[in-house]
Length: 289
Length: 280
Image (cartoon, rainbow over all chains, first blue to last red; front, side):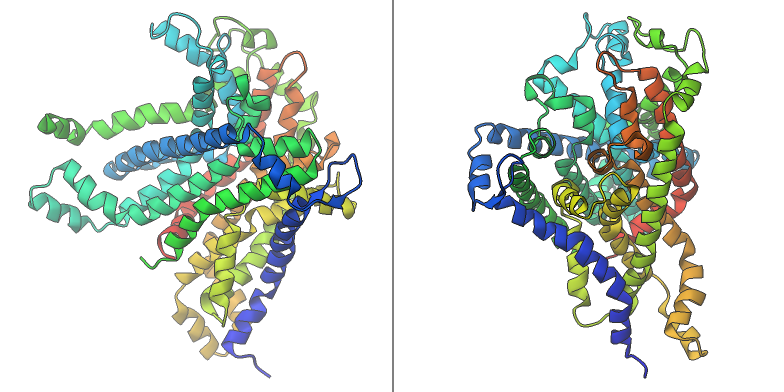
């Protein structure tokens, strides 16, 4: 007996679907389940209804943690987008040396985020790091710059370390978007008297907007939910908890306080908030271009 | 004003100048890491800092390799990443191929499910994974991390492979089948050989994700002899001070394998990622 093509498709997908079920959907459901339990590793595990959620949502530090999470993720994504677009425009314009520059700027992609945090932490070190020293040498600052002693600069530091690692991906996506634009459109714009700014605004940007938008949303989701850089650069959330984001809060409940119930409800909140960004990602991905 | 700006922007040298500046920013941590790995411990704590190592020494690279279990860490990373990548890519190839070439009732829903899965924060699933692995008695095994790594990049890989197979010329498959090849035979004889570079590129992406993962092995493994290199970097973080020079040396060891894989596959990765991103 021979399967019809659609049946063959099902048969081929089965191993993949089993993995999806076992590896993703079951843990995903399980975290919801734990979030309704009192599971603090001190007293017996019992169902508590919404108590964990109440405790997290009534935590007076939650609003500021959420604000920091948004500043961190939007800051990192904004910086990534800005530099990626500049890089992509430049790489798209040159012929000689293009592959050379591209290979160099995508190198951070291969660096673990945790290492990126360590490296930037040290580069920003007020005494032993090069950044403060170089800024003093060119007389931009008069005394060593300690970014860790001020909430805004500490945040800027982790944003730079995070964006540094994310720029390669968005650069590649944006560059591919620019390169998919037929060259005759540029020529037509030039004939019509458009200068470089016009062509960028009316040709490059609109025609490459779809991959750029999807790439940006992916970057936003990733920086919203990852804490590697924050964890290695400013352990414990840094000075005055200035870089303490939702993911770090979740991780502390799980790893430091061993309160699994609360950690699970914080996880669910992180899932929901990430999905608020992810919904746009899904929508624009599925929308036929 | 605008005229002047246009003139500056349009100048032939402008992109090179801008690229030069940004490239310097992008490679500065590599330069700093590369220079520091050849400094002595004392020199890394000098104020003001030195740039080029004053006493160029290979001891740091040597100590990091022999006094810390760096070779073991690298071996563990390689084992975990290769096994998980292999499983992901094999399962993902068939699923992605089916979703692309043999659509069935509900295949779009499955595709949507994969897309949705990509929005789940891995951080939020660490806890359920930890508890399940504990119940299975798998904590403190490499297998635990392999389990988690499969979850980590599987949805992405299926999605990228599906986008990649969408561009595969269907006529090639059909003509093979007309010539008497079975559908499965066509996969092994036609599709995989032709698509090898793309599958390879996507495998490298999955490998790099696995290689860079920190929190899962950090939580699941407490024995030094089982830790991967990302967790191993913490070996040099002490209570009193951090051995920055050795950490840089270890960082170099940690980056080299994935950087080599990545640079070799760069061309295909660019194509693989963008075929997925541009043509859904």
